[in-house]
Length: 581
Image (cartoon, rainbow, N blue to C red; front, side, top):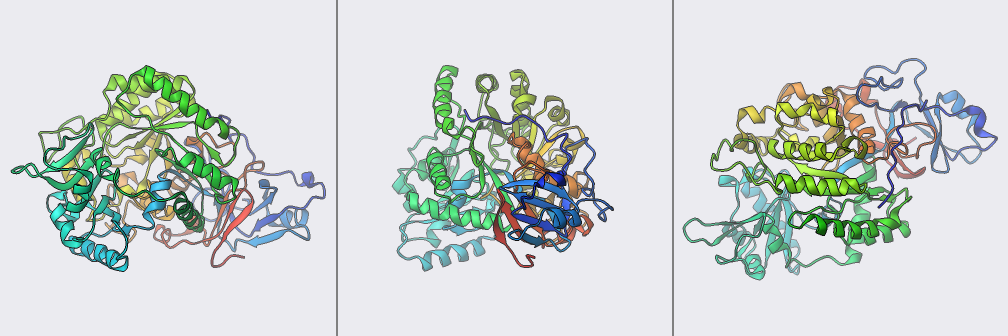
């Protein structure tokens, strides 16, 4: 299994010794900025890392040599003692200099694939979905399939699409469009026929073929594991196509300051693909891979699966770019399709409390087996029952604090479980843009839960105040990976356009320094990587983002309009944007 760093950055002064340069100038100097280093919950923030004007003596410069930070301090010392004839000097022009963003939860391969598909994200009506699908299909008459993702439940009567709707848009070839959350699919009649899905097809374990109540025929909507029946007949991209789409993805991530990502539920082909791209210099991004932990087998079967995972991860030991050491599991589904597991029935369907993916005892046994062998666990848990079952499993394992086990998403939580994150040392891995309070998203979600449970939606501030560590990500391609949209949502609880006034559930708004820390130091902590990255200190990897403004003195409304003028990964300048000095 890939090794994990357990040492903390606590104790770093963040300042290099100017006398240690030994006449060896640095490769890159960043001057004229405001250095933001973030902080852990309950710890005093370093100088300059709180909201408001930069205090006197707060650092403004960073020196980088051979991929590492060697000095953090003032401009005069940086220019006078660390600059040489070949040193590149980058003027931050008063902007924020921060650790590179680390997306703690996304899906690299499926996200990269989606770049070549119909993009329906944010489209709120069926008519506009139709326009986008037809435009894509008309522009690609030779494409054998029409593929896409991103539709919202609220665009459809009853929150579920039908094959007849998609047949009208794509009558001449198979079509399959995934929902924005990835948990429900929408197929036309040709696609269903190719997959052999008809009235006689049984529902797979942990999945549902939505059917017409009168005829029993498939409606075209597929929930959870039923989507796999359809995806099995969709043509897979070639390795070269995968590589090309990942290269495009990495360039786009650098443009918004992302320097590290943590892939959730890593497909088997991603391990060799990422390794080959890294060896070829095509993956200038820190990547962590998480193979799946799936229900259905015995603990003995699981132990044998762990043997295979450890063999696959062994070559990554000590690799500073590509790592593993973590497993991904699913404890439930999603609220909108009524598959998230709740402690009490759904408000709009009292016949169901959702679909837990695991029996509680089986989940605990599998967690204990993996944790006992040194693996970290990240478990998708959206409903309050799934969150509790997951925390119970981590508590029974007895080593959650050492392993830094993680709960992913946490869309609604029982008040009794909020403090358990801090007490157990479990990381709350959340995605702020999931809480986007736009009319196309929150009403369906809140209507399914009812006001009391919806009132505990995405309670990241409550968890933080109770001593929990937050790690923020996007869940891309569920939502865009742009970290400024996420930070804006965490700080304002508003849409990118500023609605509603005052924010949705405003008590859960985060201070900006805490939101930035969750996107950097918190995410690095969740990856056992805080001794290498996540803050700005001498000796750490030079993974940095330079912003075009000092967000700590700006109104929160300015967050979404922020641009990255420079992104540095491993000391290498991988992106220069408008305004780079």
